[in-house]
Amino acid sequence: MSDDQTPIAEITVDEAEPLLASGALLLDVREDDEWVAGHAPPAVHIPMGEVADRLAELPEGRTVVCICRAGGRSMSVANLLAGSGYDVVNLAGGMQVWESSGRPVVTDDGGAGRVV
Image (cartoon, rainbow, N blue to C red):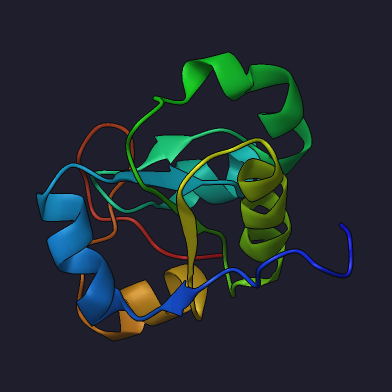
């Protein structure tokens, strides 16, 4: 990351809702075991270590909202995506804040999930 790179915006869960409703992609970059335990229903999962190799799976022309457990890993991914030309923001506080704010956390089969 160069010193002149524009800082990535951090948004709240409340700010993320209208973005997601208008077509933004929620990208969960946590590890597989974290995803399996529970994730946000609208999220797409690509672990942090795989994002650079899987950029082709991300839609162009849509805002990407990055999320992890607490916000650090997703900020790193957001910087990578911004450097690759994506319109990207980071969800401050990650899945911990998503869950604590009462948003749903589910497993792949739609059951109740939890953030680990």
